[in-house]
Length: 193
Image (cartoon, rainbow, N blue to C red; front, side, top):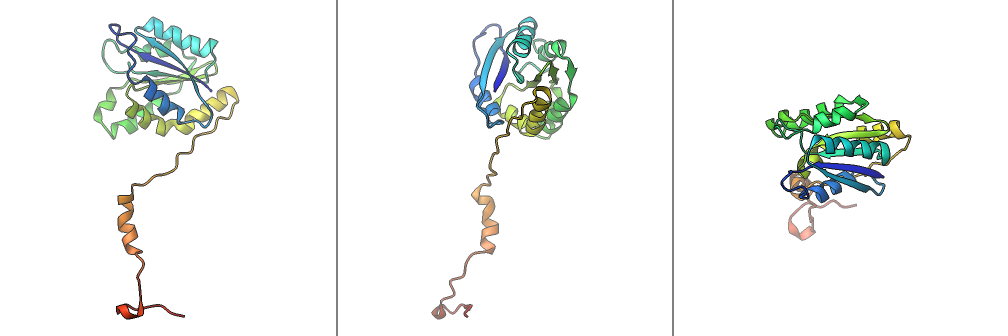
């Protein structure tokens, strides 16, 4: 599966992409299928629009994600550049990200991220930091795959992440079911035939 990743970077250091590889790992964990990332590092609106159009129209990536640039700062141009190329917006994605991220930090309300469809591509504005990206994508996995299926007719398979519970959370439960030795000479009652 081809995935376009567009990261807004500082014009002073246009090749610096500190979170790129880690974000790709986070995104790839959504799908069972192997993923191939096409990457564009951009510094302004024109470059971002060009990259979005190329990944959607030419490369035909089922999923295109932008990383960063969704805040209230003057250099945060991602939502405007994204909106300019979309055929249809899907506000449920961004509303869900803001709602659940707000439970972690009230600063989430500053995000202006949007999502939508261009031709057969789902386009998502995601945070730049991998921890925030992971939290957002955890909530959006199933809608993402369904949207891609509707757009492309391809059924991608979700990666099933096994539920892991730290052992210390099991301790109270396990204490209740500790086996009794019950040897006859121990003074403890035994259950016999």
